Length: 365
Image (cartoon, rainbow, N blue to C red; front, side):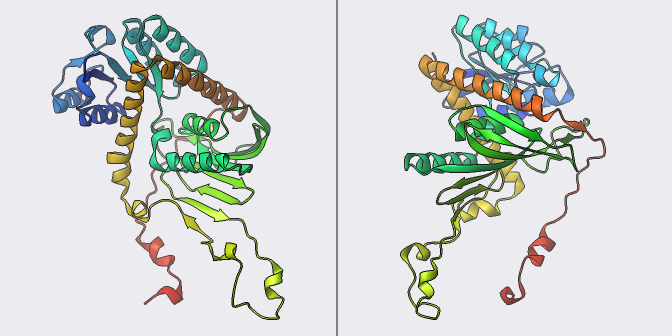
């Protein structure tokens, strides 16, 4: 296959981030067009990148290698899946933005195999630095034989599909058994059960403004993983990731009648282990949208490139994705669909006062 790979983007909402990710990696990809209905925004996007604007998949030339479809799928009432199938039938590999129903995924994989191309769902959250950091640490603990005893997690309806994918990778696949799902309270539901035999509790931010469905969530993803030796806590998709060693202070250290001069070796270790680099915690929100998200999409593009060059990787990924999509469908069915709330509005405040309030009297200079 000739490099760089010619790539078109379908949709200019979230698709603009895909366009930028393709544009930045000129070594491997060439932005070859925008596919949209011809809105003013799509015209400006095509003009910005100096590429043709196509109004349908049928207009796209046959020499295109990859189509990134950032259009809602049938799972959300859109036609992203149908557009993807049109590309796959032409032998063009497709990255389709999640969520995708497991039956639609199976159909896309079937046409990809039949037409000697590749298909994958776009999952930028799985590529976020702190998610990858958490998965790296859990792999380390698993390889060390440290047992995971309990999972406490949270997500929003908008970010639930990638949440399930992350959860599936944390436990290396398995069935979820939800024993109890609470009624909706204050925009949230709670559930308890187990996954792969590990006890599991879940907080689900389950309301959405139908006129602004991609905003207003309280949670993207949060995980607290309890181990025999401590807990690993990811506060948010953006971080931080923290390791808290399990409390273990033997009372024998007080056997001499006072506070000891010397403590056991394990008590000399940090009692809070910040695993996220400190400079990452001070980055502005714009860095998340302008760099981290685009870099994460870039990783999906490179993953697609790997699968195009190695069919075995494509088949392995196909099985993983179908398992995660089935798990998402099962959990969504049990948790119920989003509650529509038109009153949800932005309520951002400048954080300066919060930072000031967080300074204790003895910490003030």
